[in-house]
Length: 155
Image (cartoon, rainbow, N blue to C red; front, side, top):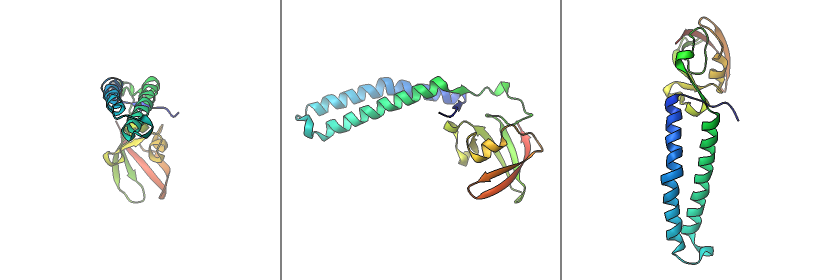
């Protein structure tokens, strides 16, 4: 499994969602199963089958979240330096060929949201920028072809 980088806020959200799945959602599914059992013959009971499938999905989601939280690395913004790009860095870059400037935040894959400018450290752009400094021009292989990004600022 790839490294999972989370901010403290993202970690807490996942922890709260895990608690919801383990408590509230588990009880809701148990009630659905109880009601479905009341419909009679379980071999032809679509409601029971649906509730059992939901129970399996919930258990899978719980196991997945527990593993993510157990192995997650928390991004400590106070420990980051501005001399090189790290997971958690906010970076201003310029596409050398088009001149277009972008502000990006390098985040873990679980927090990626390209529309909001949050690119994963596992993405072509995020991965290419890691470890580089202001003034560096970084070649990036994207699905659309090779681009070169100049790092303007890191904070």
